[in-house]
Image (tube, rainbow, N blue to C red; front, side):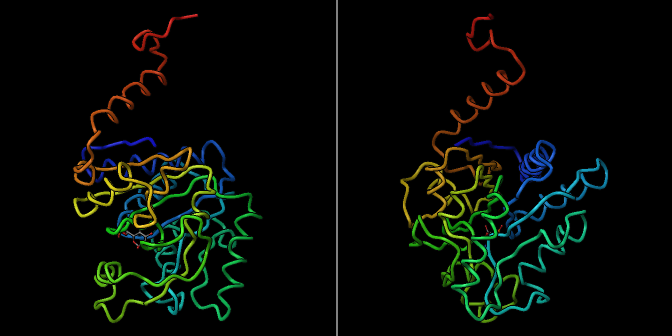
Amino acid sequence: MRVIVEPTADAATRRAAAFLARQLAKKPDSVLGLATGGTVVGIYQELIRLHREQGLDFSQTTSFNLDEYVGLPTTHEQSYRRFMQQHLFDHVNIPAERTHVPDGLATDFETSCARYEWEIGQAGGIDLQLLGIGRDGHIAFNEPGSSLGSRTRLKTLARETIRDNARFFGSEEAVPRLAVTMGVGTILDSRRCLLVAVGDSKAEAVAATVEGPVTAQVTASALQLHRDVVVILDEASAAQLRRKDYYAEVEEAQTLLESGQLAALGIASS
Ligand code: GLP
């Protein structure tokens, strides 16, 4: 796990957007796994800016979103399809037919979830999966207790999540009780994962994810089993990490390696 701590939330957001932009520059037909939530809004704003000002191209990109509430029409202000249209898709040149969000209005969820998994496979799998984190340590809507091998399926939202998301709906009663979500296993199949967290309300979940045991009680901790995970934090969300100094040293060595300053790392020149 590569842990990058930026001084502010803004800097963390820009760094995360730069990762996504680099992925698209390297592989324009990338399959991106996308997320919703307050944390990613700034990342999408930066991507839109890069699209407008620097020609960041989404014309060959395919996307799969992590999750969707059950029972909300796609036009509902809080549906994740609407969120994606509003915060990203309507402002960049991604072809509409290549954007995928799980179907929260399905009548047969077993079939529609299996189809979502199949579509991800047909697209060649996810190259880079963007992730936020819930205060209870969930990724997507994989609430505590979710199987670490789980696939796309229906999930009951935890009370803590309903309480957290009530701010968007006006009241707890208005928050859907169920969601369709990629599973932890689906997420672990992505080639690379990018987890972003900002703010002190995420500090405990971040520490448990990065430095705690791998446990279904903190589904983000399953990322420790993935071979290519980048975690981007601000100082506030990193506050409870015990090995912050070490992560900074790793970043410093990485920068020296990338800029060819090998002697500073004790690597003999050939
Ligand atoms: C929801 C989403 C998650 C997201 C989380 C955090 O639960 N299903 O994918 O990571 O919210 O959201 P925020 O960034 O608003 O804290």
